[in-house]
Length: 586
Image 1 (cartoon, rainbow, N blue to C red):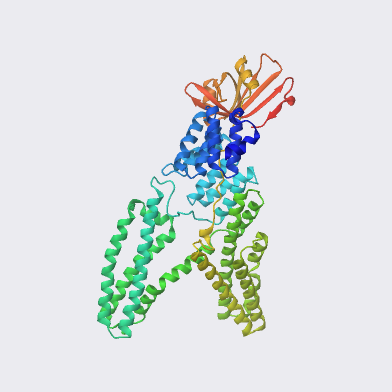
Image 2: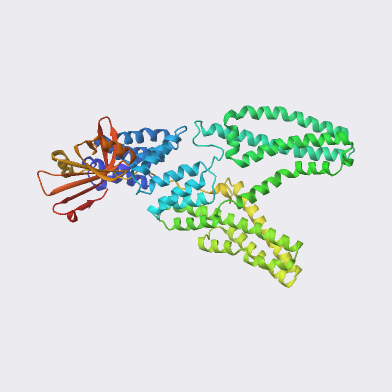
């Protein structure tokens, strides 16, 4: 099908390797990775020494979900053009998806940024690597560096918003730099979660049963024996889940990386201790009815600890990050023009507005509760609380979520009604305002339950989406026959590089490889300087056309006893004067 569609442009057998690469890139952008893979392979067959076809092969495999197959092609591209920043970028993007090779991905991304500090994409990849490890401040710095180069980069805008929100990746317990399969840590996390949930639920039910038996039926001794039986039952349950963890050397780091998982496990362990002490307190102090408030307090902790912890987590996540600044970045991403990034930006904008709504609701609840206790007239300040929320909602122009619009309207109504109640001392205004505030909470709960029932992540942080646009597909810089001739016949070649004392020039001997790289023999000082800053320029004149000169700007890398120069930019012109030069696009 792809062959027939592309045949309209001309005879397929007459296409050059670069034309096949252009075709592969077009097919990738059209969402046809299988067809793009075929076109990229044709380009590689025609020009096996070029790195661009192999980068496109790697990208096509990645789009098809074949992460392991994407790496060899990207590695081959780097071998062909060691100084190519798109090749390093492609390999870094491919390696970050392979278990145990995260450090290599970071190394190639760093080299790409070193080879092309004027390009935004290496900084975006460095930001992505930091963001996936939960290093939000480092990720934000990288994204801002990318946006300083190109303010319109959509991926940097979307993911900067996530960094400002302090977004957790899909596997917050797993460090991508660990040399173990994330599925193993995922099974371990699942086992710890199941154990924590089962323990807390079992102890809450047992607490209610023991209390009911002791207080209502006067079966104190029997109820305590039943409680001890529950503690004994926890032992095989714990052993069963412990066997499923499998990666105990990483368990402590998992609990540290995912604080809520750590809190969940710790609360379950504390529940066991609290339940045992609760039973012991009943035995030592006599019947539970005469044990005093400590006995009742421990029972309340065991029964209500779980929902209280869930409420604390919801409140903490609402106050995590900078949602208003993230919303501003998301708004700019919507104007960047990338359909894929725009989809992620719209989705993230909706979640961010829910987070702002949660903050507003919590501030209103605290303010109104304090006003009712201390001075009802202070509720007048409630009218100003929703302003940031309403401003963010109007700026984001997020009109598709009716649940969000309803909850926003209820919170605004609650603030206005309670402010009126405090000003006018109207009990009905207070009832209306507090009712609207409670209704907003009900709307959020109903929306979350509805999306959960349909299999969705709900209107909260788990719904946030990272932008992941293709990397490393940029065309290579080709040397045309005129430029190749110049370097082949030039009597003198000048290498320009920089060191600690400033720009330097040196004589060199050069040749051109079939892949379009320059091979230079230069003095030792140049080698030492290039290790610090590999960006160089090579200047030559054509002895056959004496007014014709060529300047190749590129990246140098050491290979045995020669320097390999991968071109980034080619400038050609005629003497006299450099004003006559013409720039050829990379």
